[in-house]
Image 1: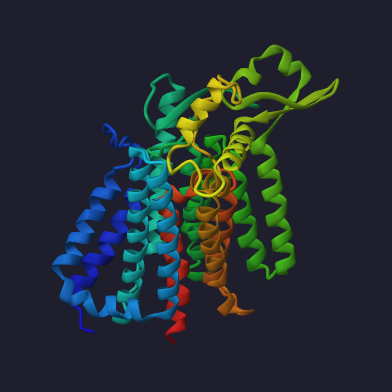
Image 2 (image 1 turned 30 degrees about the horizontal axis):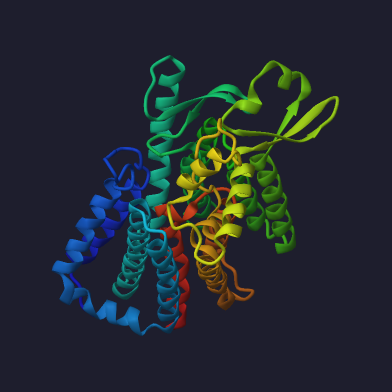
Length: 434
C-alpha cells in the first residue's frame, strides 16, 4: 500500500489532537445534548470527513481490518453489545436513552478509527504519537488545573475547580478537575498520562524529564481529593516493581490490596463519633444516611455509591432481562425517592458502576454482552504467554485500572478508555497477522 507522507502525517496529527481534546469535556453545554457534544466530537467529524475524502487511499487498510480474524470476532462482539443496548432502548424508549446508544456507536467508531490508524502506521513504518499525546494531555491538564485551583483558593471561582461542602474527611474542599466533568474523570485521564510517562522514562528514552513530569502530574492530582488517587499510587508502585523484576504474584497482591482499600473507601465512610456529632456529614450528598456500624469511638456509614449499588440491584430484580433502558437510571432514582426507597438528600446520580449499571439499565442480556467483551480484552494478552515486555505491561496495568475504576464509575462513557482499548485490541490483531 502506497501512502504519501502528507496522508499519514495528517492522520497522525488528527489522532494526536483528538487525544488532547479528550481533556476538555466540560466546555460546551447545549440543550438536550448537555455535555455529550464536546470539542473532541467536533474534531472527530473532521477526521471522518478526511477519511471519506481519501477513501481510495485507505480502502486497502479497511480491507485488511475486515479480513483480520481477531478483529472480525471483536467486531461481532461489539455488534452484540450495541444490539442489546438498542433493544433495551426500544423497550424503554427515551430521548436520553437513544442519545446514549448513539454515543456508544460513536465511541465504537472512534475505537476502530484509532485501530485503523495503528495499521496505517505499521504498514508505512511510521510511528504513532499516542503515548506522547497522553503525556502532553496530562501535563496540560495539570497546569490548567493547578492554576485554576490556586485561583479558587484565592476566592476567584472558576470552572476548573469544584467547591464541595461537608466532603468526607476534608470538610469544605476545593477539588481540582481542570476542564473535566468531575475530579474522578480527571484522575482517570491523568492516570494514563502518568503510566505513559513512567513507561517512557523507565523503559524507553530514560529521559529524566519524563520522570519529573510523572511526579508533577501525581502531586497535582492529589488536589482532586479522590479515592481513585490510589490507582495512581498503584501505577507508580507497579512500574517500579516491574523494573526491579518483582514476581507477578507480588504485583497481583498489591493490585488486590489497593482495589479492596479503594472499594472500601468509596462505599463506606469511617467517622469518629466526635466528628459525627459536630457535622451534618450523614445528610451530605456523599452519605446515604445509613449507619452500617457504630461503636463508642467511631461509626461506619454507607456512602452514596453504596446506596446507588443497592438501588441498581433493586432495579435489576424488577427488570431482569432488558433492564430499565439506557440512561433511564436517574429517572428511576427519582421514582424510588417518591416511594421512600432512596434518600432525598442524595442527588439522582448515574449508576456509578459499570457492571451493576449495565445490569440495571440493559438487564442480563446487556450485562452478559459486556462481560464477554471484558473477557475478550483479557484474552488479548494470552498470546503474550510469559513474554511480557514493558509495552505489554503498560497495557495490562491500564486494563486493570480500567476494570477497577469500572466498579465505582461509569467508565464506558470515557473516550480515553476506548482509546486505550484500541491499543490493546490492535496489539493482538497485529500479532495475529505475523
